[in-house]
Image (tube, rainbow, N blue to C red):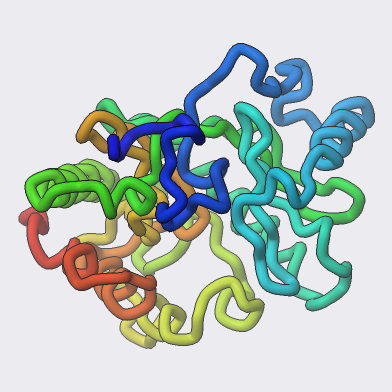
Length: 281
C-alpha cells in the first residue's frame, strides 16, 4: 500500500488505524470545515461564542484520540484539530484546567519559535487557546500529510533510515536556538510552577528534567516529544511537526534521556534517535 495515502477507500481492513480513518491522515478538501479568521486568537465575547460553537462540533464521530478521565480528547474537524475535555465530567482533578493553560501557552510560544528555525518543515498555526464553557480548549491547524506512526508499517528500511536522519537534522536546527533571556536552568518555555505535581508530566520525566543538577552546558530549544506520531510525512519527507506542549530549553542529552526512558516506543529503532547526530557545542 502507498504509505502516504489519505483516501479512506485505499486503507485495508488490516491497517492499524482502519477504525480511525481521520487519525494521522489528512488531505484538504474543498468542503472541509474552515475557521472564521475574524476570531483567530480573539477572546472577545463574540469570539468566545464562536469558539464554543466550534467545540460543539466535537463528538465521538470526529474524535481521533480518546483521553483518560481528567485529560483532553483530540478531534479532527475538517481543516482543524481541537483539544478539549468537554466530553468528560468536570472537576476530576483540581489541576486539569490550570495545567492545560500552561501547556497551551507553552505550545503557542514554541510553534512561534520553531517556525523561525525550521526549514521546509511546517508547524501548525494556533487559532485559539482559552476557556470554552469553563474548559481549556486549544484549536490549531491540521497539517496535510500522514503521521509517521501511521505510515510506518508500509515503509522500507531505507525509508525508515532516511526519516531518522531527517529527524536528527530537525533536532539540530532546533538545538541551534538558545535562550534569549539568559536562563541557566532547564525549563519549558512557559514554566509551570506545579508541573511535577499536577499530572502534566510523569514522575520520571520530572526527575530527569528538574533534578538538583538542573542545568546543561548546551541549553537549547528542544521539542521534547519527538515521537513518530508527531511527525507528519509525505513523499519520503518530514513535512510537519506537531504537539509542542512539552517543548523547552534543555540539553541534547537530557532531551534524549526523556525520549529514551519516558516516551513510548514500539521498537528500538526510534528509541535511540538522540544517540547519533548530536551537534558539537
